[in-house]
Amino acid sequence: MQYRKGYIKKILCRIFLIDASLIVAMFSMLCGQEKLSLTVDQAISIGVQNSKSLHSSLMKSEYADAKSGEVHTQGLPQIKFSGSYTKLSNVPPEEIGPYPPLFNDKIVISPSIFNNYDLRLSLQQPLFTGFRIQSASDIAEYTAQATSQDFSNDKSELIYNIQTSYWNLYKANEFKKVIDENVMQMNAHLKEVQNMFDQGILTKNEVLKVEVQLSNAQVVQLDAQNNVHLAMLALNNIIGTPLRSDIDLDTSNIVQPEDYGDVNRLVQEALENRSDLKSMEYRVKAGESGVTFARSGWFPQIYLIGNYYYDRPNQRIFPALDQFQDTWDVSLSVSFDIWNWGNTIHQTNQAQAQLAQAQDGLGQLRDGVTLEVTQNYLNANEAKERITLAEKGVTQAEENYRITHEKFKSGLALNTDLLDAEVSLLQSKWNHIQAVVDRMLAVARLKKSIGGDLTSR
Image 1: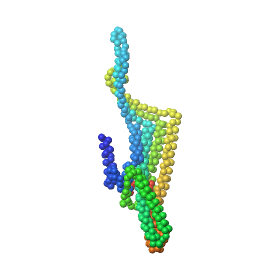
Image 2: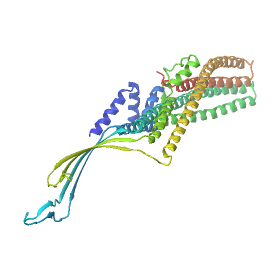
Image 3: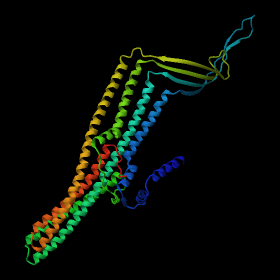
C-alpha cells in the first residue's frame, strides 16, 4: 500500500509540472482518442516521459549514485553484532583428587557446561589505508557525476531526435499541401486545354502533355501521402504514443529562431556547458583517483578493532561458570605487502594508461566540439539566407505562373510554357518548405552542440 501511495504521488508531481494543454493531450490519448494536437514542446515533454531508453539511462545514473554511497561507507566505522548457541555432548567434568589427608573429596577444576552462548559486538575503523578508501570513494563519486552527465546528454539527443521527427512530419504535411494544390492546378489546366482542343485551337498532343504531367503529379501526390503516414509513425514511435494516433501539429506559435552572436563565444559556451564534455572531465578525475588507488599498495593498512563479548560461559574467565559474563578487547592491526611480485607496479601502470586514454579522449572531444559548433553555426546562418532566397523564389514563380497563365489564355504563350511555370512554382514552394525546416533543425543542432535548452521556450 505504501508503494502504491508513493507511486501515485510521484505520478501526480510529474503531471503538475506539465502545462494544461499537454494534460489535455495526454488525457485524450489515454482515453483512447487517436487525435492529438501537439506543439513541438508538448511532443518533447511526452517523449521524454515515455522514453524507455531515457529511463534506462536514468537508472544507470541512480545506480552509480547508490554505488558511490556504498563505497563511501568503507571509510566509516563498521559495527557488527554476532551471536551463536552451541550444544555440547555430555562429558564428565575435569576433576582432581581426592588427596587424603589434605582433602577427601574430588575438586571440580572445570565443570561440564553443555549449553554455550556467545554474543559479540565488534567495531572496526580504518585509520590509514594508503589513501585506498578515499581514492575509491572519489572514483565512485566522479563516476556517478559522469553518469549523471551521460543522462543529460542522452536527454538532449532524445529531444533533438523528437524535434527532427516533428519537423519531418511538418515538412511532409506542407509538401502534401503544395502537391495537392499543384494537382488542382493541373486539373484546371487540363480542362482549359481540353476546351481549346474541342474548339480546334490546340492539338491532341498538347492535351496529352498536360495529362502526362498530371499523371506524374498524382504519382508524387501518392508518395507525399505515404511520406506523411511514415513521418507520423516515426513521430509516434519516438514519443511513445500509439502508432495509430493521428497527430495534428500545432505550429501556430512557431516563430523563426533568433540569430546567434559571435561563433567564438558559442564555442566557449559549448566548452563550458556540454554534458558530454563534463562527463569526460569527471572520468579524467576518476582516472587520476584510480592512479592514487593503485599506488595504495605501497603503504601499510592500519585498522583499529574493538570487541565486546557477553558469553555464557566466558572463556576468558576461570573457572568457567554457567552464567553470562562480559569482557572486551581493543587491537591495532597493521599489514604491509613486503613483496608481491610487482603487482602494485602493474596496477599503477594500468591506471596511468587508463588516465592517459581519458585525457586523450577529452582533448579529442574538445576539438570535435569546436568543429561541430562552428559547422552548425555556419549551417544555421546559411539556412536563414536560404529562407530569404526561397521566399523570393516563390514570389517570382507565382508571378511567372500568373503572367504565363494569362498569356496562355490569350494565346500569347505556349502550353509548354505554362507546364514549365507550374513545375517551377511547385519546385520553388518545395524549396521554401525545405529551407524553413532546415532552419529549424539547424538551430536545434546548434543549441544541442552548445549545450543549450532545446525547447522553444
